Image (cartoon, rainbow, N blue to C red; front, side, top):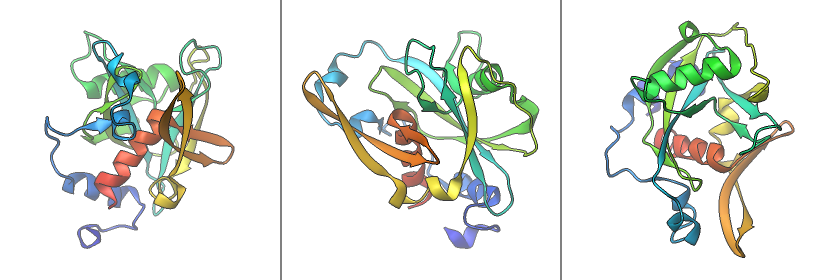
Length: 211
């Protein structure tokens, strides 16, 4: 695919070209935590899936783009303190997953929608916690300002796309769930632990765009 791009291999220009060249998503695409835990009983306990959307914000820093991530507030009841993409539940008033991802991003970290160019979407990712997540792909113009919603987010930080798309950084770990092992990816970076659904989506991005 490199002969199709006009920028450095981890630039926003290259990322945009890879997204444009990716296979179209089909209903039969099957991505999610179950790929790493086939047949796990936890998956059979999930109720009807709840629809959510996240933004994968790739920041255009020339040759070396970054990905903007958040650290969820420690005070939250669910997934407190975990690294995540900005996003959340799709509301009935949201006209599309893209609109939901942009709305939630602004509500969480104050990133203005006019700084984000939506360039595509990945196939839905089903989490073991019962969400069907639409990963929305966007290019972010740099030199933006953020205003964190302290009720939802403790921090926002950038990770080099080069790091996240290197399979050498894709470790696997597990934890016990009702005496059964639950497997997930993890990608520690600069004191932050990127793991679980967020790492699973990053791994899916790598498999579709960089292999």
